[in-house]
Length: 439
Image (cartoon, rainbow, N blue to C red; front, side):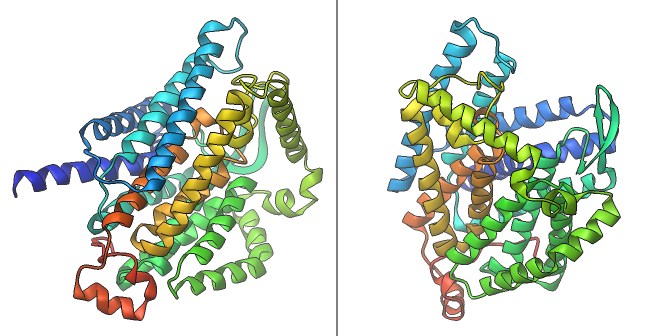
């Protein structure tokens, strides 16, 4: 092995581990800590620290080749937005004297180590089509491993200052229902891509494994009993059907229709098995009469009103009426950074959706990454905050880099692809076949 090959191997490892750790590193260590009955904080700090370190290394050592317009525009928008957000953090945590709901140091740690470094580090990656399955395998193993470790320790019991009660939503001690639900959705998307949207051949053993993972993912997404993950799942699946030009996408259409028909019986069965209250929460009454829904609408309205008072600069990191963030990245961007930052946030999301669409259509070997991006974009409109949307920022960086490089360099390069392309038009635009040690 020459030095160039060895160096490339190490870079692929750094990229694959960092991407997998961004996608499912925290759920994995949260589930592991509960299995071995140890506090999750040291594991969480370790995985996030290693992820930031690997991304920082990629940011330094990666030599960016030619990039397309989407990469440059997205990176420029990200740089402009984060400069505005860092200025806001500086003002609110260091210069102003009022107290914040969250610790000032947490904003800096999450924003720099959890979001900015992974975003730009993964965006500098030199992804290649021949390594597509390698990146997928790492992400799948992390997500599936976290799900399997979480299954035996799920609980609907909520501990509060006033005692314990049954909340009707499954979670782990260090993994709340929303995060658990999104872990399940990630596993569903990865499994469906592997079963129906993967451009290379799949062995029977691989199909069986991904089918099991699909069932586990659906179960976690349901027992978490959170609306945001389920909505993001539906949107991501519809996006896959719309964007992909592989004929096998119609299997997903069939699964969506079957799921819609069988949803109530499935939910009733899961409620009986897991002791959850999915039916009551999702179907028992109008969503607009639900207390948490009404509270979220009030949060949106309050945060937006702060922006209208200070449209040029924004009000601040936190809403003064309710405290904390409004659980919607677009509204939060306007509230925290004003018109300039809000428009940049919208620009970032639009460019990323475009890159996701074109990746699914032209580069199906990386279609799974596009689906994770769509999931995270819509998940961030229901829960989370700008500085802590670590998965979103990481996969956005990786996705625009993947699409940029493959859009410029990716072409079918061998007869095997050309023959397969005649059978599936989506493969003709997806480049050469990805190696797949797992399937």
